Image (cartoon, rainbow, N blue to C red; front, side):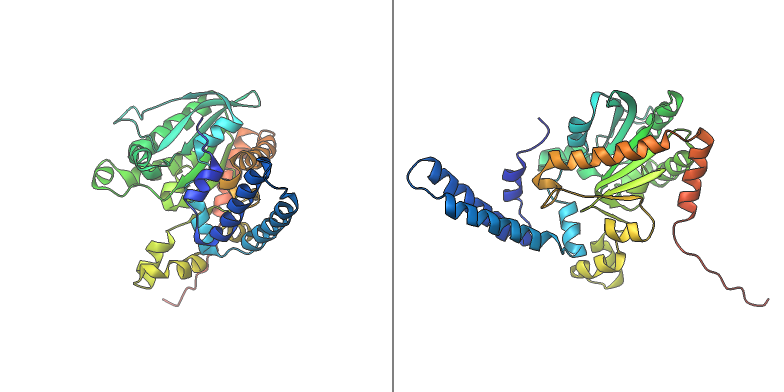
Length: 332
């Protein structure tokens, strides 16, 4: 199974603001074990603590700061792309290689079925431990990863299959080798190709949406974001280093970047905020997948009613409408 025991993992990788809730839940589990052993009837005490835990969870997660959402988007127990593949799709056939240099495991893709319908799915993939992260390069693609994604999207167009992408990366890999092999051009070519692809494209941000590394597979007719995901031109830490000359001001930078799903929905950059289970996707990966699946099905149905020309025009107008521009011409 690709999915982890999320409660155990969430406890071992607890964020500071989660700790009071996790400690209370641990106490409840201990009382349940004592009660099941028959040593004492603790049902009344357990019920009181469970109500307290629900109230505490509501208090913690109903008013998260942007920086806390950044932390949740990076949570080690958060479901990754292959977890969603396991829950939502059948008959997944992974396709590897860019037919030019090699294979990049930080982007995974291939044909699959969604409710029996053939689709092409592509997503960033991180690892849950050091060994996996080294193999996946911490979800940071190299040029061959983007060229593979482009190859698979063109394959989807040829066979008239919708493209579903899942975004979750800190950004494109900035190493020397990646730059030597044309990182910037690989991303630019991906943007150009996706803007003209004659098939529906639906992109979902499931964790981190970092800079060009994210948008390189994110030029969709519809862009969805999970409630505790982020999407930004730069990470808060890097932004803080540039603006404030102090990486310790990342929380302040996160506020300025307005990188949450709620922010971006308000700005008209994304099309839907996908709610997460109580306490975040990492506490209930199956519930998170159910929410994502429902949103994907709804938007995919709408897109499939459009002609190919209308899909391309829709995508063009969507991205041209993002942002505000003004100019003031002086006298010559």
